[in-house]
Image (cartoon, rainbow, N blue to C red; front, side, top):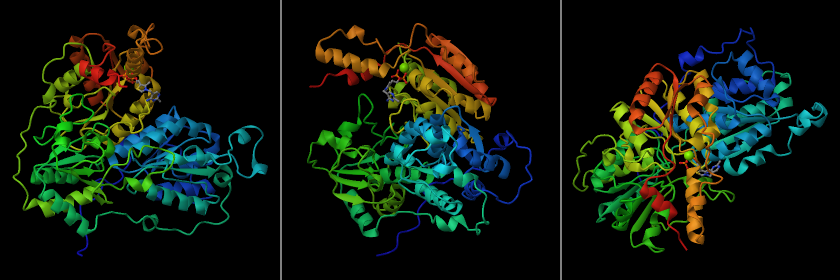
Length: 607
Ligand SMILES: Cc1ncc(C[n+]2csc(CCOP(=O)(O)OP(=O)(O)O)c2C)c(N)n1
Ligand SMILES: [Mg+2]
């Protein structure tokens, strides 16, 4: 059997060096210390050896040792601290950074209470399969070293248990040497596919104790060998044979890296097979949505993807998030042959059901889809079916007309007009966004959802993504629901403070509207008054001034925009502010309601 060929790296990008304008901020007075003297100095030094550029922090006494080491031993460089007002924002920022770079940055959170605040963001990163190095701390494990009261309430027997069910690994090292090993192992595990967050709990006593003797130097890279999981050549050959002899292939283009080479390989494979390609707004862009072979997304309200899936005799899933869900329309024994390419089974556990229902599979390739696609292109490419030349279309071609009502569709329409053809990264989208409103042509055009359905993740994830995109020439745009924005709003301050340009457009329907639809559905199912659905859902009277909440944190605030006619002007001004290096927040008072299609899809009463 020939050895697997080298294929495009899973992630094109190396960890970014700290941005110079960010690096210029919060410079400490030099401490004149150049040799590690404390346990936490070893931890800090290891973060640098791991090339962690940033550590998002919300402070706490439990890691005051590490805090001191980063500022006074490392000089607040590599990693540089990014102060966050809430731990959920700290982890969400690291999550957003990983969505762009594919690499973990760090987040540090205070013992138990900080980790409790952070836990939803850890869950989002877990479900999104994104690497994050979460550092925490505990009051001294040795009870005789604890200060009265506070060290006792902030010491827990097994703090890692708070997040163990939705992290890939956790540890509580008992010495500086063990801490160094834990950081290296944790970063290695987090960044290895399937990626995910890890948690390392640093004992306060271990951090603050003087080093008995210096640790021998090590080369961290040798302890974290890169793992590339290709498929055995015979399985690739079997898959190629099934695909080549198929009448109609459907490719479910699921979780993918942001690699341009891997994107081009997916396009080449689809064209060689004349396969219909289905994508999913839950995850980052994986295929050009204006390509003639693109068959829509299942989340779309009038999904073309369902007939495409029904019409296929071979279905190729490239780590599709919910394969069983996509196949549901075919019944329990689909006639089509199913090829699954995924590593995801490797991190499934007994607590979180985010692994979804069990799909029927005829050929399973336990491998990185990017590597498998590169191999398949070589095998299928030459003798494939006729190529289809993509015809470029205007961005968001499917929704060319100006919408009548003032909804999220109006936001999409106005943003398309104002952004024109400049490169945009949509860092986040509200739940009610429809696929056809925006065209994706590059892996960085859209970064996917929060992963875990944890509302409030949008702002922090967007700040982390904008951090990674700074100076890339891309305009980062976060379209957030008002509920999402309000829950995560303090991430705005971190973006302003660290000069991370970003445009927030808030789809402000003054409601947790998604849940109004659930109340509507309940009422219909029970023949009760639908008109009561807004109670306990509407954030009105008073309406919250979301632009002012941006301004209060130093962002440029625009709005409230109350008519569609005023929206392009507000967005133009806001984009100019972002181009000038600012964070901008546009409060768009859309009508409380989704599009008719979306409402119909969500309120259809089922038995
Ligand atoms: C942390 C969290 N709390 C509650 C929910 C339930 N939930 C799902 S969607 C939603 C409404 C979100 O409101 P908003 O962001 O304004 O979007 P809209 O539904 O109004 O479009 C809520 C509360 C959740 N998913 N996550
Ligand atoms: Mg809302």
